[in-house]
Image 1: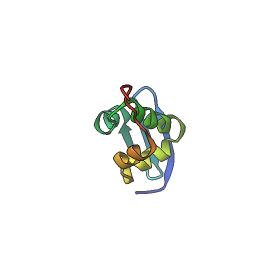
Image 2: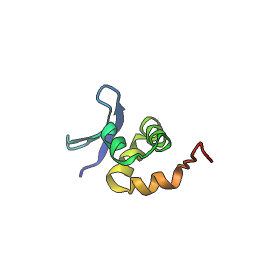
Image 3: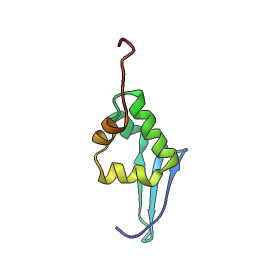
Image 4: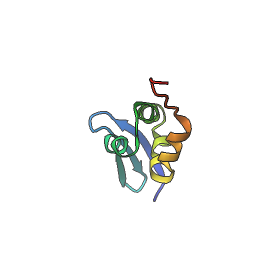
Length: 82
């Protein structure tokens, strides 16, 4: 890959779009990612926070990290029954 020139969330397509200096582009479908890896509303909320506030961090997590482990680490789910 070439040098990253921009990374932003496109509300029209619900994708985080990465554009590189060589003209190539990667679009991450955020809805598909949430459907695949988020088990509850707390995990979805954490992903949404990253999408809107740190799209580069979100892209790095999805492309290079382990999103399942990250979400289990940063979110705490408590049942209403307890």
